[in-house]
Length: 210
Image (cartoon, rainbow, N blue to C red; front, side, top):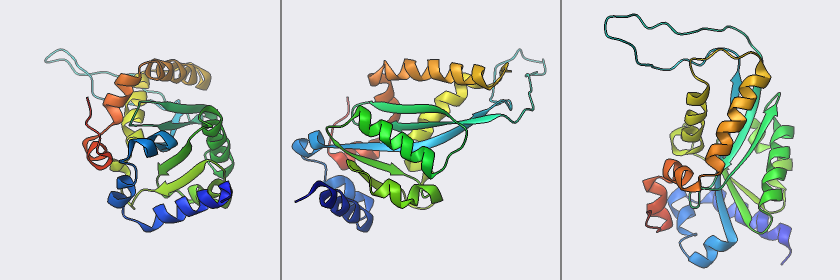
């Protein structure tokens, strides 16, 4: 059977089953070696101050720097909860079908020997035909209003912490800061896995997390 037909059938199968049944297909260790499950999303970052809670002395009013500028860029990330692998592309000026296509190409480039199953939300440009026709990629979507099921959001939370309560010289400065923070996580897969490998995934994959 030709490769493209296999990927098409995988995509059709995943779209018709519940997520419980979907994950149950990958309980066999041999299957897990062939397929790689990714959760993916996009993060917009920019010069407008990202505020978060901070400590201060009792009785003193908290004062935080504030910046109102509207330069923005995008970070694409895919995280693999089972093993802590991750793929990132930073610096896009927009998030659309074209940039998403480039991101999936990079994912395939870094992991060419597995069928990469990408799970993300129902953003309109995620439904582009060009994305669903890529070899080695099978796309599945989260339920509507199911963002809390996507561990990429938890990873992005760490990225927001790295940039919070700061004023950045320009968009390149914040991109450099995010780039350096991402490298820290890439080089610590155990930490990444601990952040994104949630109990419902361990249960469905029949894997006992450490």
